[in-house]
Amino acid sequence: MISLMRRGLPALALAALPLLATTGTADALTGTPVDEQPFTSYAPAQPPAGAPSSRVSLALFDAIDQLPVADEHREGYQRNLYKHWNRGLMPTDGCDTRREVILAEAVAAPTVASGCKLTGGSWRSAYDNLVVTDAARLDVDHFVPLAEVYDSEQTPWSPERREAYANDQGSADTLIAVSAASNRSKSDKDPAEWMPSDGSYHCTYAATWVGTKLRWSLAVDDAERQALLGTAEDCASTNVTYEPAP
Image (cartoon, rainbow, N blue to C red; front, side, top):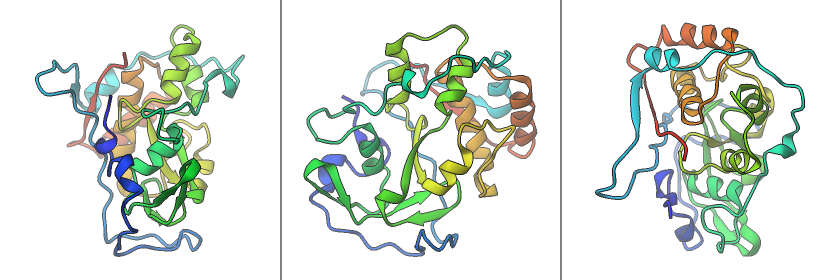
């Protein structure tokens, strides 16, 4: 079983922890950005000690070159083709995948009541560099949106593979908890159409997008590729690290 410690505090421990004090937070309703605690991208899941790793690390430009280029094909897309949210990594914890991600990414642990109801806690929203202090104001975003995944499948996926993507916690990059406002702004747009309002996150955003597409063997269209290459020009030291999905 993959541990939720890869993103933050283990989910099972959160219920026992009091709300932790944080510095430099802002009320999510005010939209005030914060800069006291710069965002650090999450480390991907680590294989068990002694197990072989299939993790790949490439410079951003080289990683973009690994992506196949193909036209998008939106016809026939329906969101319910990608079953989410399922029972998550811990089927007996009462939390679905969405709530497990929220718990794992907490900066300050919420309390967890029956039915996985969350109270208190705080989260840093990477897209807009805000601290959110109410879990109800978070969305768990598919980093590559489901519609974009459908556009980018090189051959049609099985229902099982689509569900696996929609609930992927085997990588810290596929799912991310962000402010609802930033996620609604992004919608199903690719990097040619949308980038986070926090410019300091653009290199990480591009690398995570590319890594997620490589993990799931997804294509890019030409406009998307050109946008990624343009971003990469300002990200000379940025690497892409990913592990191919099972």
